[in-house]
Image (cartoon, rainbow, N blue to C red; front, side):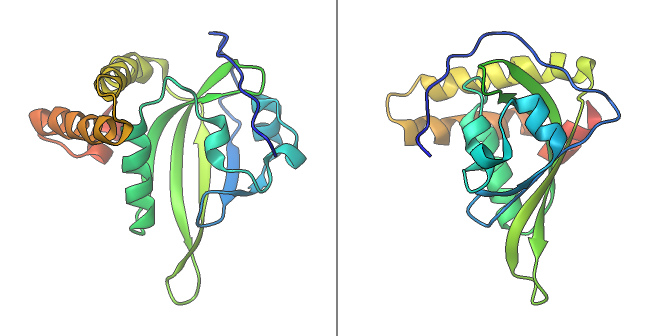
Length: 174
């Protein structure tokens, strides 16, 4: 499916605290399952999502360094929690507190990934948003995207080192 560029609107979409957005992907990140809450909140239909890369809902305000950390973690067989700003089909956005886990076969090989996303705490977002903005600025400071990503990851690691904690501890402490 050809990707149509949609500009962010700046409008936030909310979902209920008792709802969970669920998706599953293959090992390359292409969606194999989405639940009704995902479709309703994102504005996409199932046929528009299945087989497409999960990154199709990535909001441009999200630093690539956070996704690198996420992918490195789940590809190593570990779970991760992260605050993520996603973009709807309309250009609106929604924040989630994501729990992403690898799915294993009987030989412990990764056969896909499963993500459950809940409503994030607003007070946590007040701490996450400035960090993400700083990471994004660092990434954009470099004309070479690869170099920008490397520096963004370095900045994230520096922030965590200054606090004396790892990423999981940081996210779960918010």
